Image 1 (cartoon, one colour):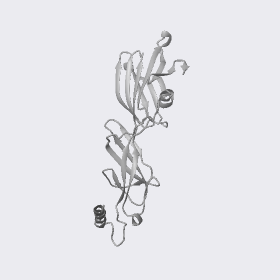
Image 2 (cartoon, rainbow, N blue to C red):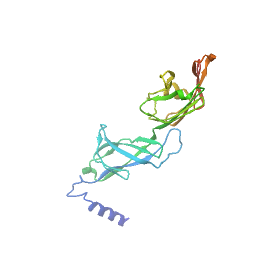
Image 3 (cartoon, one colour):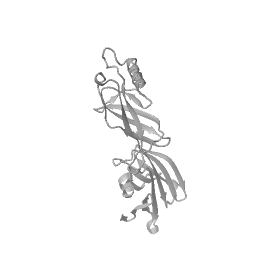
Image 4 (spheres, rainbow, N blue to C red):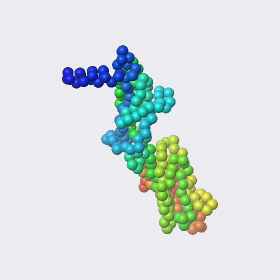
Length: 246
């Protein structure tokens, strides 16, 4: 123990931190600790993140230029919040720390504090399947939102399969799902992705679920050549039936 104490004194003495009782140059910073946990998970997960971006903000929400190395951010004398984004290969995550206070180095010297950040997934995968179309090649499906990206579009006989990646799918998300003809834009269906579709399934939890399968069935009612949506399923749950709201 005596040797450890002596070593600590030597490190402080030769670190350039103390000079004529001036501690203003003592290093300070925040050590970021990433984890991932949702209300649906009992265990705390520690994914292997890549492409990590860290940003520092002061108590007023203003961006603070800083240097980060090995999950440690240089910062001094103030209250700070750390925001981060990252990926684990296919999925994107984002998180924010609780406020972290660093005292004036002149009073406290060297101080490093931990800032745990719960990294929550912000990507959702939405697959939309439309069956019963007279000619699936004549139709297209869109999600009208800048946060929705088309990943794939496959037309089969009587069926259209479309895959999207959607960012920040939360309760304030705005964006309509539209099924329409390619030629003149005649709409077969239009409805809000969140409120008209996903949240009509009572088992959907936006904090935990990130994979959604929406299936539309189309029927020629009365065999008149006029097609309409007959049923809508979200993750195998019937949320709408033609002529009946469930």
